[in-house]
Length: 151
Image 1 (tube, rainbow, N blue to C red):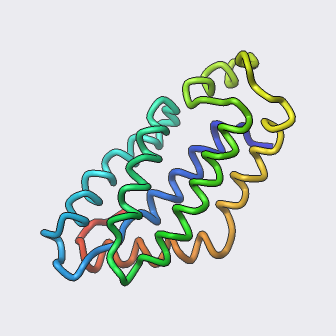
Image 2 (cartoon, rainbow, N blue to C red):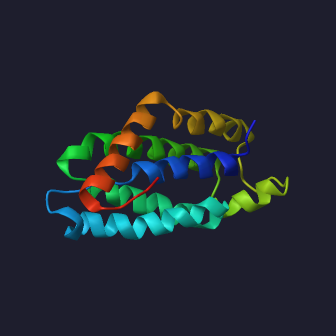
């Protein structure tokens, strides 16, 4: 079974691939500019630096809000999945800064162990066919409309 850190990183990498819609205004649109900046931010997550997850999730929500009509539903699918993960983390009493302790085998103070055990289920939901389909649609749109390659 993967650790919560590995699952969170995998979810964000999937989100990175998914996080790339364009707009009718093309590569110069605000959405495309934000997407290009975000792709660099998301790339840094490949190093499994969990300290940046919180910022990446916020950026993800922003991009979902900005998404053009062509990929709005795809973004909604991805954003909903990320929101569920965030909710599960809060219910478990976890902050992103707690992942370093978990990796060392330490239980952070105030963490609900039962809720923590349920986190894997939430992360696994991000590996669904629906999530994958939305990710691929956004990735294609990003490449075609924003000239941003997220693969």
